[in-house]
Image (tube, rainbow, N blue to C red; front, top):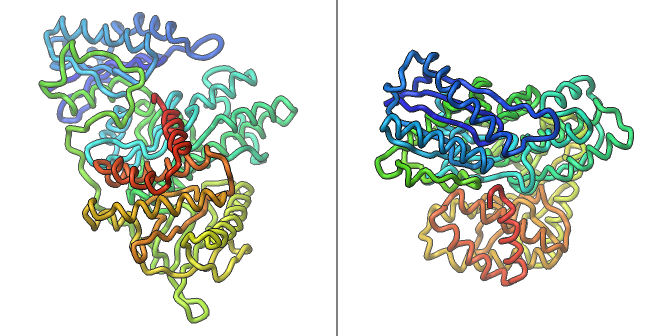
Amino acid sequence: MICLGIEGTAEKTGIGIVDSEGNILATCGDQLYPEVGGIHPREAANFHVEHIVPLIRDALDESNLELTDIDLVSFAKGPGLGPALRTIATAARSLSQMLDVPLIGVNHCIGHVEIGKLTTDATDPLTIYTSGGNTQIISYESGRYRIIGETLDIAIGNCLDQFSRDIGLGHPGGPVVEKHASNTDELISLPYVVKGMDLSFSGILTSAINKYNNGVDLDIVCNSFQQTCFSMLCEVTERALSYTGKDEVLLCGGVAANKTLRQMLKTMCDDHYVDFYMPDMKYCGDNGSMIAQVGLLSYNENNVGIENSYINPKYRTDQVEVTWDIPRNTHNIKLPLDIIDKGAEADIIDTTWDSKRVVIKKRIKKNYRPTQLDDKIRSMRTKEEARLIHDCKKHDIRTPYIYMVDLENKQLILEYIDADSLKDTINNNPINRLGDLFINTGRSIRRMHDAGIIHGDLTTSNILVMDDRPVFIDFGLGKYSSLVEDFGTDLLVFKKSLSTIIPQYSDKLFSYILDGYDNDNVNKKIDEIERRGRYL
C-alpha cells in the first residue's frame, strides 16, 4: 500500500509518500517566513492553499509515481492552528474523493515519533519532542504513547522565537540565538524550573529579556538562555529515563536542529549507558512523510472516511489508541559494579560505612551542564535534601536516617532500607489489596505538606514500602513551601507516575491517595494545574 501524507499544522506545508514496506518515496515541503512577528494562523492557511498542489506534483515526480498509484491519503488532524488544519483537511478530502481511496486523519506528534523510529534504529525509545508548539517527553506504555513530562506553559521553540522577536533578532529565533551563544562561554544566572518530569519556560523567558534590556551582553544572554533551557530539558529526560528504564532516547521536532541541544542529550545518554538517536533533519521538522507513515500504521476500515476527517486543534498525543504493533526493547542497561542505580539526580552506591550497610547518594557532575550551573545545582540540592529528610522525621513521616552530609563531594550517606519500591509493590500485588497502603500514603503526604515540605519528585520509585507503610526517599527536587500550588504540583507528579506504570488503574489508585490526603482545596488545584497541560 502507498500512502500520501499532508502536513500543515502550522507554518510548514509538507507532502510525503511512504509505502507499507517502510520505504520513504518522497518528502517535499516549503515554509512560511513572516516578515515581522510570529506565525499568523490565517497567513499559514493561505500559504498551504498556495503550496499544497505544487508540492503534490513535486512529490509524485520525486517518487516516479502517478496519482493513480496512491492507495491511501492521510493528513494531520491536530494539534495545530485551526485555519491551517482546516485547509489541509479540505485538500485531503478532495484528493481522496477524486482518487476514490480511503482517507485517514492522524496525530501530528505521533508522526514525529514514528518517522524517527522508521529512519533510525530506535525501537522503543523515550522520545523528546521539541518544537515551536510542543515540548513533550513521550513513552509508549500499555497501548498509548504517554506524555510523562511536558512544558507547563510555553514550548521550547516558542520560547526561543519569542525571546528573539522581543529583543529584535527576528523569527525564527532558534538559529540566531544559537549563533550568538556560540560566541562566548560566559554565563549569568537565570531561573531553572523543573517540577518532577515537567518544566516551565515562561520565567526564564521574562528574565532573559529583562537581562538584555538592562544591558547584559547579547552573546552572554543568548548562551545563558540556551544552556539553561537545554539543561532543564536534559534533566527531565534523565529523570524520565531513570523512571521508565528505557535504554533508547530519540530526539525529534524542529528544535533538534540545535547542535548544542543534540550534544547535551548525547552526553547525558552516554553517561547513562543508553543509545541516542535523531533522524535526519528533514525528518525532524514537520514533514509529510511522518503523516504518511502514521496513516499506514493506523489504517483500518473503521477509522477512515469523510465522517472521521474532523480536525482537532487540541489533539493530545496520549488521546490516541495505538492499534499497531510496538516492539518492546528488552535490553538490560549494564551499570558499573558498585552502582546499584543510576538515577537522574545521583549515582546510588550500596556499601558499608562504620560497620553499617548504607547507601551513598552521590551527585556526580552532569557533563551536559555548564560547570558553573552544575556546581550551583548540586550543592544547593545536597544541602536542601538533607534538611528535608531530617525535618520529615519531626512529623512522623518515614525517611532514611542520614549518617553523613558530605558537601565537598556533594553526597549523602544514608540508611540502607531493605524494602520494595511502591512501583514494584503495585506490579506484584492485586489492585484490590492496595487500598489501605495508598490511603496511608496519602495521609503521610498530607502531613508532609502541612509541615511545609514539598517532596518535588513524588513517583512510585521514590516511595518504599515497609510494614505496609510508606518510606519516602529522594528529596532531590524538594523545597519548603506553604503554597497550595506546590501541594497540587507535588501530587500531580505522583498521578502521572501512576498513569505511566498502570494506566488502567491509575485513577482508582490516585483516588485512594486523595481519600487519605483529604483536602478539597488541593484536589481543585490538582485539576487546575492538570488543565494547563498542552491542549487541555
